[in-house]
Image 1: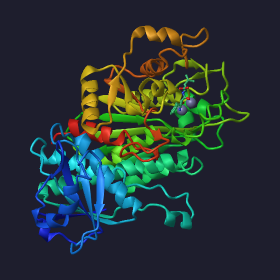
Image 2: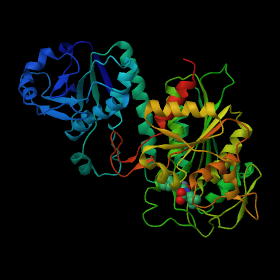
Image 3: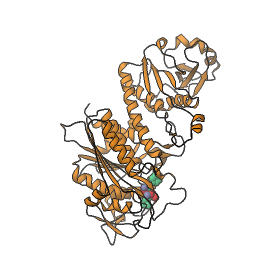
Image 4: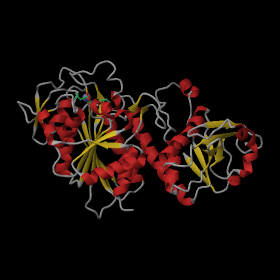
Length: 496
Ligand code: BES
Ligand code: ZN
Ligand code: ZN
């Protein structure tokens, strides 16, 4: 993707189409910037009232004598109450149009908006353009690819300042992180294996100075005594890994943020096999791992002033004669023993070992885990929210604020002590399930018992990691939601 900056409409370069944003007013649409020089081409249509300017509305015209063969009128809705999120939704319509028509170059006139800062305006506009500008076409034959849509390759931004262009470049870096996470979710589970995730993490180390990656193989995992990760791994023909990648962007500071991402590359449920209809999207059960790796990559690319380590415990949860067994008891890295009530509650098991290890060895000053952890959270929030549980109010506030800013909205759930009663086992220190009511919180409470006294937050992204339909500016399948949230969080704690 390339951006070009022009201050004046008349100085723009050639493109496949030109986008002119309009506000919706009582009976008509009004230009959101100054197009006087080309409006004579548009008068006939604007007079008809066929285009009202409502949010996301598009109207295509084929004018004579302009640099572009197509002009797309784009509705922003009412001027009053315009927000960054409304800009995302409106500008996504321009990208969807270009992709469907297989166009590659677009010119966009930046709307004039007094109520938003230039940074906010550029964030909304560029995220709206870039988030839908994604295709995962690896699985289509060449002829299939030819018949489908294509992506935009260059965007001319007309009327943007130098600082605005810098912000656009930053948004591009972040959106490329979102694509990176989507690619990992969308890839076949037989390709995106624990070993592949390790290779990807090593790749990030190679391309970005300041990033260091260590990968624990099965032998090391055994030596460390990560009995829960090993238990989940028993049914898989592939070894488990534990990826530990660090970026030190603020060497003078003792602050150290650790992000732990669930890396189950396929979740069959294990011996408690998932039924028909529940397993088909489970190649995405490593989305948490994908999000934290993407966040690390973006943090290093943007040279954020943060010290960050991401930890990804990774394995398949499969079926085999050697599979870990319901009723059996396994010892965790922390020493606590866990009775397996359900082999499908595997995420909390591998995270428990990763969290306890991180607390012991990485000296975190805050620790956040991100996981496609429970169907219960999906039931609670539907595809509009991320569930948060935390032991720390200040940390929660920061995550909630990042959620509002990115519209990757976060909702906090309680961690009442009483929920722990659900996890009592007659035979071991804990059981890994505790009944259906409050299921998402019970999973959170399970994780909490493996975290030492360090500000900790748990994000359950099961509701939004994978969409079976296009939703607003999110594509089908892997959404990459969580990446913008984490990067915004890291930006908010980095000294600027
Ligand atoms: N990976 C699933 C959770 C999930 C569900 C992710 C839907 C994305 C979409 C997790 O490992 C799981 O199976 N959880 C069980 C826990 C239960 C057995 C206590 C669940 O939620 O059903
Ligand atoms: Zn499961
Ligand atoms: Zn799972």
